[in-house]
Amino acid sequence: MSETLHPSAVEARGWGWRHSGRRAWAVAGATLRIEPGERVLLLGASGAGKSTLLQGLAGVLGGDEEGEQVGELLIDRMPAARARGRAGLVLQDPDAQVILARVGDDVAFGCENLGVPRELIWTRVREALDAVGLDVPLDRPTKALSGGQKQRLALAGAIAMRPGLLLLDEPTANLDPDGVAEVQGAVARLVDDRRTTLVVVEHRVEVWLPLVDRVIVLAAGGGVIADGTPDEVFAAEGAALAAQGVWVPGHRPELPPAPAREPGEVLLCARDLAVQRVRGQAVASGIDLDVRAGEALAITGPNGAGKSTLGLTLAGLLAPASGLLAAAPALAAGVGPQPIDWRSRELLTRLGMVFQEPEHQLLGRTVRDELEVGPRALGLGEAETAVRVDELLERLRLDRLARANPYTLSGGEKRRLTVAAALATRPRVLVLDEPTFGQDARTWGELVRMLAALRDAGDATGEGTALVAITHDADIVAALHARRFAFEAVPA
Image 1 (cartoon, one colour):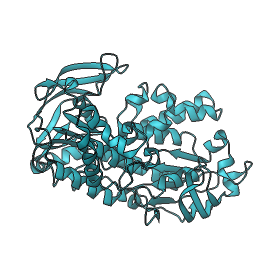
Image 2 (tube, one colour):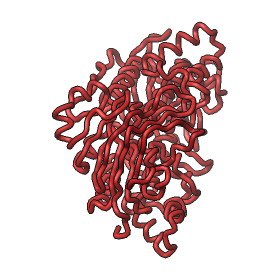
Image 3 (cartoon, one colour):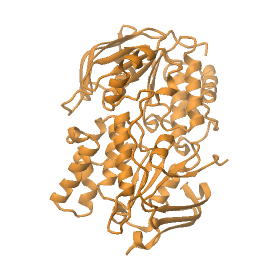
Image 4 (cartoon, helix red, strand yellow):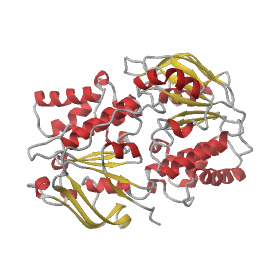
């Protein structure tokens, strides 16, 4: 990677940003300096503004019509908004960065915009794909990639640009363990010679501690509350930071107790099931599993193995490629056994789905509107709707955001909102794709405890909700005492 630019210096001088239409500042009073070649882990509770700061450094927050800015944010003494090309950004949501239809073209896009000579671009593209472990043909359609593969694609595109400043926002959140190691290794090789400055936001703190030499912690109310080497910050402030929701090594959230009773009846039954995104192109087959009331089922395995496709099929949103997927009479009363044949209103109280990408299911103009969509579709009255919505706003720490535009929330807040929206209709089966993505330690624990309570709560049948969690988070599998269904290998 001999063509890397000189490492960039970063400086914030009382910088803040408020999204248009919001009263609260996403970031306020940020003052810091990052020297060229430093490797920084940026931490903070959910909603502290970590992603906003990275987007500001990358110059993608927009102009005055998108929000209000105070203070200064500089890259190499130049306003960050005018320093595009110096920074490479990998966003929380990899779908938001997929631009072109084919893998090779997508990775090459940034290089082309920077005017890199054509004879160098494709060498860079192949090196970047190898570095992140994305072993697919250059002409593979980007729409055929899994969420984790798209995350590697986004990182490859940033690496190929040879940036002076690399900004990573939750780069390993949707990756399997091998992918986490490959991505961390690729970043380590890029910044090893100190010719690239690194700022990474990540809740998997332990993954990045061997690589970073500095930790900066943003306060939820504005400003910087800790800054120093990892040892200094965690030794002096570890307990206080953990109490605020920051992930701190050695400080784990309180976990819920084990289920008090055995699982109940089978609500969904799959036998020799094959699943597909595109008709006639099965991505996984030979699936036999039962989804039981009062039990958590964890679907795990490598990126691209078909986990999300299976989840969408179980939720009645994709048709099976072949085989059997049937609902028990208790779940399908009055609508027939095949979930794919149910209308959307019939799905609401039976099968809930939380997508991997929160933006794919946001419908309301405000957070409260979003939570009211399901209850209103069910025809619930104003009083019952208000009770359900108010309870969910409080339990998932979204009450202060009730009037906010959902698209202005942080990644972790959007995830909690989509979970809450699914819960508002009280489905018997809840399928969640990466439910803990983007959560700080406090909201992670609260979300896990709430899911455990749903698993254990009795309804008219005396049985709790069936939970299906598609996840790479081994901690949530253990915390929910989930039965594991593991994909062992990615299909050829």
